[in-house]
Image 1 (cartoon, helix red, strand yellow):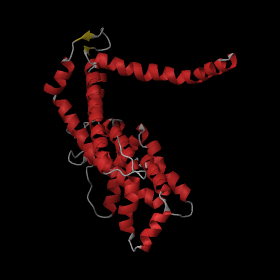
Image 2 (cartoon, rainbow, N blue to C red):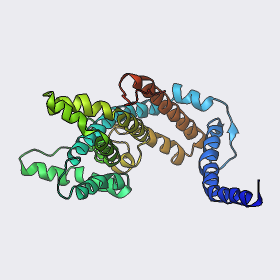
Image 3 (cartoon, helix red, strand yellow):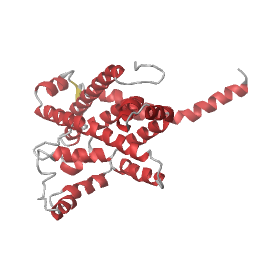
Image 4 (tube, helix red, strand yellow):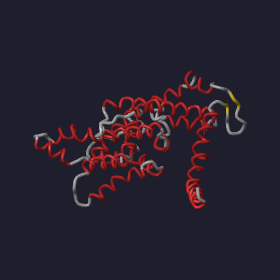
Length: 298
């Protein structure tokens, strides 16, 4: 190898070095360290004390809060993710039409995904749905009595889920890109054969979008399992722990009770749950994901 080629190789390494350092310091090291801490009794004041699998034993045998948090989070994922994807697909179909100022509409509909996860938007959501908030004021104008959106344990989680559904922009953009890639010849052939728009939607659009549905489903499922900001700011897990999401449980153990070792164990349990659910989704995807080249999900 000539000296010039060797110098080019070193220049490439210098460009990549910040990313490598970021991966090692901010991702790989915390990942490995959290597993070690999950096997210890650690409170950030005293040195970690190795206790083996005791944290995991306590999680599964002597922690009612874990059971409640997992139950609430599972319901949240099952409710929020499908509705969010369905709404994102609906909006993508609407925005795929050739209308004036369509790019402006696409930008406006994407804004909630940029702003929706912030603390400020969560505070705004709380003011909208509080008992004397904007939503109840609008309902009162049409003669509907006020609803305790955030104080009723039967509907508080649904109200929280609406915030997640409102952040449909990223999924919508992917669906929109997928719709625009579908050959128009397929729709023309369907029209010639007398197929209705509804039939073409389910026989052409949906099958060709299933790879994007798979990607969106996995990504939104992972995000839903880790949802924190909305529940923390809007309801703080109440009322009666009806919105006590898993991330709130983890945060409480780590930064309220300073049980860092226990919180690390909880995070690894969550990681395992997400991996199992993701594996199930990929395992079953062969039955419903269609690829134009005939390929299958491994």
